[in-house]
Image (cartoon, rainbow over all chains, first blue to last red; front, side, top):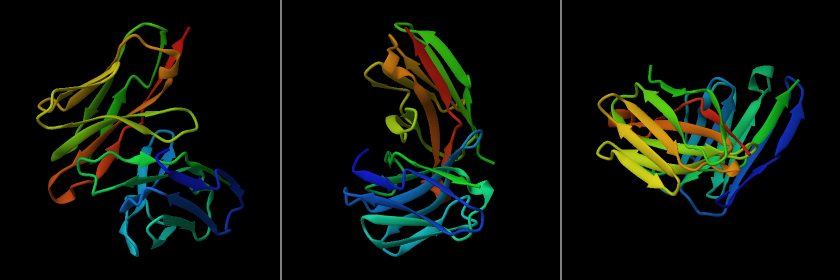
Length: 114
Length: 114
């Protein structure tokens, strides 16, 4: 998966607990993204980063925060997990602003909030 | 609201047969359209990317077409193989002031049977 590692691959947590998902890349790509994938919705952008410490919101950012302190790592935090955040989370990377660039995706993290 | 509609939702074909998947979109202004293949439990992988001026693009047994006037695209798979069983996702990106913003379709699940 193009040098992208997501961890953990699976997580079960309880409502109200904080959760952090990690995306690590070895490609030195500038752009990194977090998506969630749910049946009937396709992939939806949560947050993205266009450089170290440079992040911006996507279309479904409520309840999520991100941090990027190093080029290779992009963290997604659920401050207080809710059942509606049960989903599969994908990290993606791109070398340049992807107007005409393809995205490279990680293998995903299956998160269940009980 | 920009939308990407894919049909059929699912499809079952016999190995060796051809099939065509459809993607209709309302995204405007248009920048590019991408097709991704997503195997079960994995992240999407790019198959093709098409810009406004491109009508057809091939990648091995996969051929994508684009009609920017009618806002339709198709993905044709020739001589299907068992390994083609996957979800196929159409993604349309905006140009103009929202350049890079992408809308994902829900995908078509293809099952190839021996």
